Amino acid sequence: MIRCLALLALLVTGIAGASVTVTDDAGRTLTLKAPARRIVSLAPNITDALFAAGAGAYVVGTSRFSDHPAEAKKVAIVGDATMIDLERIVGLKPDIIVVWRSGTPAAQVEKLSRLGIPIFYSETTRLADVAPATRRFGVLAGTQDQAERNAAAFDAALARLRDSYAGKTRLKVFYQIWDRPLMTIGHAQIIDDALDLCGGDNIFGDLAQAAPTVTREAVLARNPDVIVGGDGGHDALAGWRRSGFLSAVKHDNVIAIDAPTLALPSPSILGSVDRLCHALDEARDRGRH
Image 1 (tube, rainbow, N blue to C red):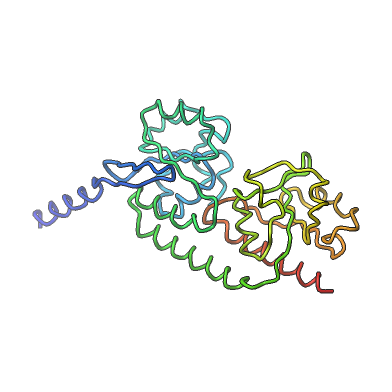
Image 2: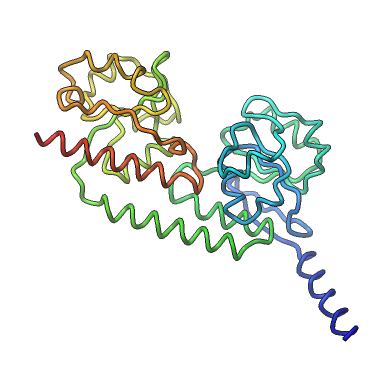
């Protein structure tokens, strides 16, 4: 009996101590001596994906606004997109720091690199990127089984959404992030991909930036079929309703939607994508009358 217990202990120790190797979204191959058990996440979408990968119990530090899933709110905050508390990160003794490649300022990453803690770059800009990121985090944390289950479920739900809206009449859409200054989404924002899935064409999809500033005149010139706003709500969209010649206004298709995770390129996004698709479907119906 004692021999069996000793053998089991050796097996468990061997599994826990096995090295892991993963290639990040900067093309860097990272090897850890053992699965990460203390992880700092520097973006809300990364935090969400880590929890989906089964690594939530190992996340010891997060960035501000890491609200999904709800359990993430209990984790210590170590900074945000503009400022990072390096001293607090060091105090957490992380095995790895997961960085948002395009969202964490280079100067901050440079400071992090001097800490001698392994850095893993993550970047998800399209819906198809979400499940692979979840799987990679599962490898990092040694939680591949749960990561695979949740990634596969995400892929299946995404495929169902694509099938539901494939072949729908395409609509020209202006998505308003903010009204002063007037900000929208470019191709690099995952909302652009969500619009495409729902049968919408982002009128500023030709812009490379994630959140470009545009002029009112540019919107009027492109004459969208639908104008959609998120957090700003109805008040931020009120000015468009006075532009009676716009196609969106003629068909009462100036819409505020409650989709809080739509800009979050991680597993929690799909509920908001579904709401966006339903809103565009209703806009199609109004456009027919």
